[in-house]
Image (cartoon, rainbow, N blue to C red):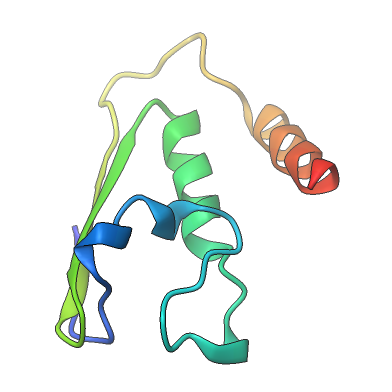
Length: 91
């Protein structure tokens, strides 16, 4: 779990914050909206989950859960990179 006391977010946006190029209110031009989208790709490629809870002006909490056993059917690093690059090119 990772928590902070920063800007937070409205809980109604909890799923959208993982969308590519989504920037929360007040993000301005200094953010691109890619970090959480990439994090979700990495976590799910390892058969894990990520959840977020937040409150405006009171911070956010992110919980990442990864399986403890290694899957023989999971994608390797090269596969993940190809998926990420392919999606970027398609948009």
